[in-house]
Length: 576
Image (tube, rainbow, N blue to C red; front, top):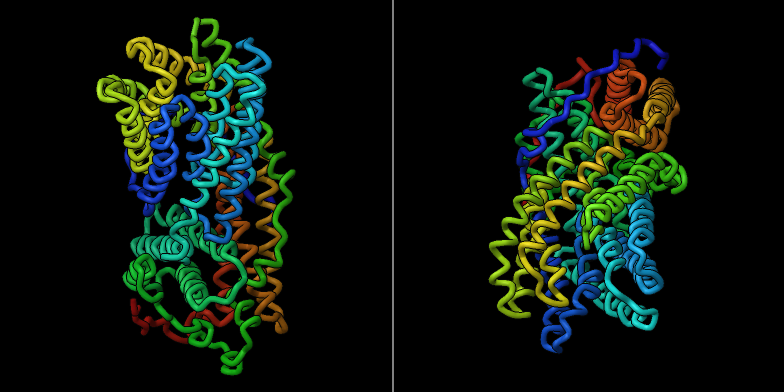
């Protein structure tokens, strides 16, 4: 794609308030992390209650909270991700405990906490671990920085966290025997629903179609990544899911010919526990020669893009970390300044301000502002809830643990609708954890939390504004170049007479991934401040050209008839 089109003028960035607090739909699996964290936290905490050592619950809870991660991953991948999360949590906890045992200088401890927060943020973003990404890890390491320690106690405290982490790993893997393909089924269903929404929007016309198209391509791309992460062992269920994702891709290529009702029907059947709908190989129906019906499994997988996708090497971790340098610097600077400011105001728990700042940083400044609004509102309402819950929690150790469990469940059940709603339960949870070693005056805790929240939000957002991401525009240019090259390569294959099915599939998948990356990069850059105007027109033109090439590639593969030669019909049903 040439540099057709000029850069749009710099826009005035609006700071949303009401929009940032608007509630969305709950996640499809909101109950899974909510139940998992209760199952992970309850046994170690209740055991400590029975032993009369509830003061150690902060260390076991550090490991138990790892059960919040990787619920969207296939179980083969989840096992590895959870193990790395637990190791990362233990690493941050070890640094914090050793630092706490070597010095009580609050300035030094805040500095250590800020550096840890920056590392945790960068690594979690680069490896796409989340939600809840780095926030839980930062909360654990920052809180333990200010718990008095001796070097001799560190191994025992780490052992408690490791034991609870191992239990959290078992909790996270527990559903595998009952629903081994659950994550893949959910990802496929989301791709089908998103494709149906785009097909309906394209039929109606209007401005909403472009947004629905981007969301659908992102959902389909995510579904392929989930299926690829599920492993290489042959599976009839996974094969059927792959064919359904191909159906979603066909709907993206020809949305006005798609049947949204049928796509939704397939999505509902996939989400259930029954048999995955068998749709047949769409390439046979679209005009692939009959000789492909007897292809061996390996070649059929190539036609579905699985082997082709596995041949694409992942981006090196260092390249992803390089792009995250500005947000890592924002995190380090914002957390440090927030902690120092809290200390200057006489705060006894400056890590509250530090964690507040760490929780703000998103892909750009505009999203960071929205998170700051959500955090402040959620925390202010949360301290009121804490004041109501405290009399019950102070009835005894068992009552305190039960209140903590209820807050854990509520936080995970609500946070999917909006971050501020989940924070309403996270705030009393954090305050109740401070009472594990012993009860403290409620009024003092409430006052400190409100002050530290405001300090953390204000200073943290100021750091986000001050540390500019000048490379955002360059990343858009690189994403545009990647789309142009992928489109040109796919177009050459479409025009050539000797292109193999595997080569066409690989080219189509890479072009689709490049389009998804371009949209994500452009959206992130659009929310940054203090940068040159972005080439929005070039982005739109590149996306349109890429979508036309994707449709042509689908037709060249025989997934769709050529325009004007036949009629696209829907003759299949969905058997649950």
